[in-house]
Length: 300
Image: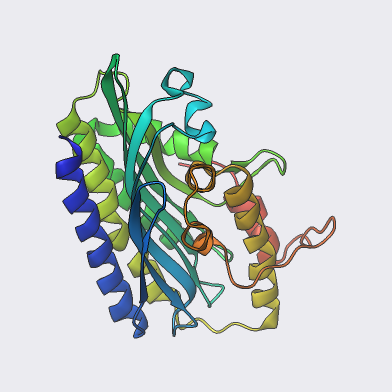
């Protein structure tokens, strides 16, 4: 079965990422193993109040159930009522220093089956960057690493497709603004029968493996940048957009909650300190306005 190949990769990916993050932060992640009453379980690795990360989590889950949740069948109605198996690694990292961006990465595999139909499988995933005080070099490095991960699996056209998909997906429609500066994103890869398993799995592995190289150099460059209450206040305000996206639009969050997943693990992506203000906008010419004016728009 295809899942027999995917499972060991995902378990190893979580272990490798956690080890690198622990080496950077100096604090050991808490490991929380859990079982899901409806079938399956997972392992949540969480860090809070570390030297670098105010909060972060690297989750592995492998769950199954009798009927696909509504979040998965909204754009795939033909799968309604099918049994499913889902597995993936999902991470979100919220550094304390506002000059260090928040980052997200997820890779996942689904398999849907029914007695009277052939099984359907597909991959999804991606990564994106959410800076508060962005630097050109950081954003360019993140996108260049994403590009290098995708190029062997379709060249420049495939990279541009996944980059544009990411820009569209991580977009808060009710705010008419992006969540951050994007990255790459894909879903339903292989479901149409046109992409073979090895190709789809290879791309998924490449994206997952690229995350450390895409993100850690940015943190290492910015972790010592001085900051004060002004920067922390703006960081907390922009984190509010992160919360809005994850609770309203994020497919992984909706799938987890609708499938009876473990709320503590699903909601570990939410930042520990966050603020909302009524009808606020940064003053023109300020560092905070620069984020809106130069970065919160799709760019090459």
